[in-house]
Length: 212
Picture 1 (tube, rainbow, N blue to C red):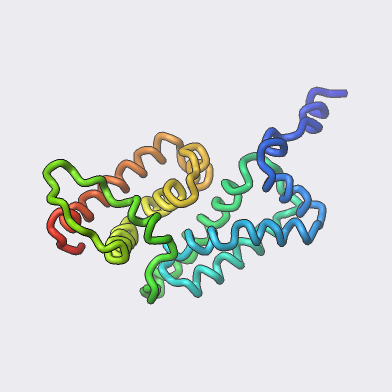
Picture 2: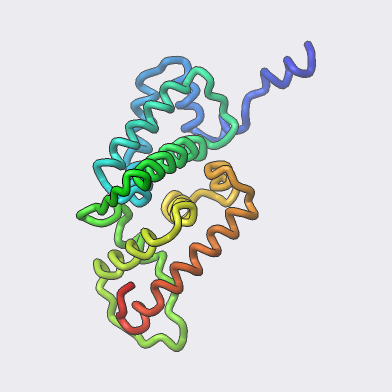
């Protein structure tokens, strides 16, 4: 047997470490139940990330359906070259980027009436830690979440996507790099800029109560 043939038969390491990859391989073999299970596992998470990107719940749900449709259509050519979540959010990133560009061309502004999809607790965690010079303020959790959400919304698209993937999806630098088509170094730089921008926006609120 040729070396190429031997390598072709060797299973991907993700098949043994990622149960979602194994589910997707079943989807590749036209297992409808496996596809339904993947949708159940990722639908809420996907909608949450998309809503924070496009700022509209209904639109986020539509885009999530588009992402899953693309996953299903791509099933026959699927190869487990990364974790399933990385592959899925790569598709989601492309879908969201296209939607945001279309939205910008049409000059439409979508604001979710109920705010972003991320939980108050998750959003609180994005606020910079108070410095020693910061006066102690009793912060209303709902208000803080709203302010942090507005700060995240003000970030440039790529910074916002990187923050969402890092903070809410807990993807590694390497996985974010694959998802966004960047180098690991670029991802680290992108996240550093995003965190610095968040700090600059949020510190006046944390110190003095001035909302951005």
